[in-house]
Amino acid sequence: MTAPLGLDITLPTAALAARLGELVRLLPGRLTDPVLGGVVVVATPAGVRVASSDHERGFQADLDGLVGSEGSVLVPARPLAETLRSLSDPEVRLVVEGSRLAVRAGRARFALPLMDLAAHPGVAPAPPHRLSVPSAALRGPLAVVAAAASRDDALPVFTGVRISTAGGVLALLASDRFRLAKAEIPLPAARHDAAGLDVLVPAALLAELARQLPRSGEVTLRADADRFALSWEGTLVTTAVLATPFPNSDRLFPSDVDSVLRVDADALSAAVRRAATFGGGRGLLTLVAEDGGVRVLGSDPAVGESEETVKADVTGNRSSRTYQARHLVDALRGFVGRVVELRVPAHERRGAVLTAEPDRDGVRVTHLVAPTRPPAPRD
Image (cartoon, rainbow, N blue to C red):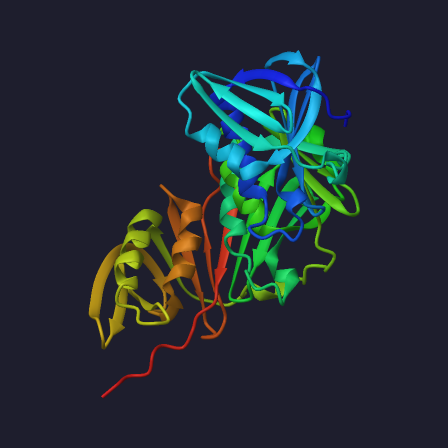
């Protein structure tokens, strides 16, 4: 990055506010070094770049703007983002004034202190290009799979999403030991040479990126032995990968099926949400397969009870299993607007499998949800 100069730039307010909003959402909530909470603003003849890094994560985005004076500065990221978010002016001017970066819009002026740019670690260069996929095919499955990862840092392997390629498929896999989510995104034949990609990426970061990815266009996946990155439309986000190998999950999927339920995913999800109110402190509910439907039961002595039947095609035995409501709700998000197939294994302690036909992008999503013991009856 260039040495600090008297930077003076004019940019579209909405575009700059959007990029800085994305940046601060990727920064950790607590930072030991205030410098890592800053955003680097760089102006060159090629345009303007905003960037940040906390050693583990990196973010950079390129924007078009009018560069009156080149230079680079480091200023607190969150105050700048909040200021820009509140402005309605179409353009904003950022200009160095002494030891401050002035933000000028209309008749308003805000000033942020300049931080020590030399103390900032900078953003590491992007890892090598591995493959590109349609953003529309990636963003939904990425959000669904990342939601199944654990938030317990004591078991790092379960806080990540395994991203791998093999057999012409980009596979996403995550588990918190009580549920497992898998998505398989088909790759065009020309991109099958990406086979060999196999990294474990922090799920919390991917969950946020799923919200930031565009609804159209392509997203590039980049990786080396230590880092993973996604890039799109002039934006690059990098992260250190988790070193722990992900355990083999194939053995978790049951081969013996006791009953199969085919049901509208939206109708079942709505019934599960309603029953969750009566699920007690553990948020439990019971699914009972019956002729022509599945009964959704919730019961809590302190709140009351609920019973609702959702129309379903049921084959096999008439099973009954208890689950955590939130696990079912998260799983059913992957099948919005479709018919989901719920396969209940014969063994009462094995997880039920939720799946459906591939969507219009050819993406196949599979969930494994572990049952739990039903609440003990009370007198």
